[in-house]
Amino acid sequence: MNTIVIYKSKYGSTKQYAEWIAEELGCSATNAKDIKAAELEKYDNIIFGGGMYSESIDGVSLITKNFDKLNDKKVVIFTVGLTDPGHKKYYKSVADRNLSPEIQSRVKIFNLPGRMIMEDLSFVHRKELGVLKAILSKKTDLSEDGKLLLELCDNSNDFMDKDAIAPIVAEFKK
Ligand SMILES: Cc1cc2nc3c(=O)[nH]c(=O)nc-3n(C[C@H](O)[C@H](O)[C@H](O)COP(=O)(O)O)c2cc1C
Image (cartoon, rainbow, N blue to C red; front, side):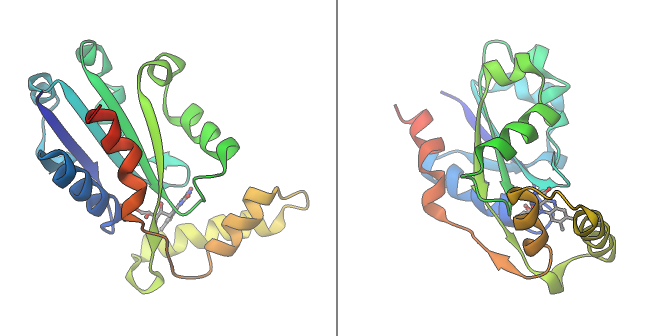
């Protein structure tokens, strides 16, 4: 079977997961910017990973916009974010925001824990976090997920975990 891992990563955490998965599966990991939609047709298995930015899965439009060409393929999408992958409600809302019900019914989605190092962030991303914090801090009825995200906005955190790729690898080693 012909398999490819494609990633979109701003600070390297999604890239790192993509490389770990590719290494385990003996295939290549390719930056989304280096692949054209037409090339997807060559593969039987497509694994796409994107970092999460304000609840959007970075680069996932490569999959969603070309989904009609992927009918006969096995497609897996993984997200990388700071929110604990155990927060099922949060990740369901992320899936609903980014993927149509049809796509959700036909792909497997995995959520992996990421990393954010304050000193590395671009000016634009620092600003974006500032705006997010301001919005969250003003809410009087902030959910538990919201409180957690607010805390995560303030500090560097590294939750990278190589073992988290195991369920994705298992999908293709059955
Ligand atoms: C501006 C900004 C917005 C973010 N928004 C979210 C978010 O909505 N949910 C989340 O879980 N993590 C969020 N994160 C954390 C990133 O998803 C995390 O740093 C991830 O590891 C980045 O992946 P990458 O380095 O591959 O781009 C955000 C980070 C930044 C800088």
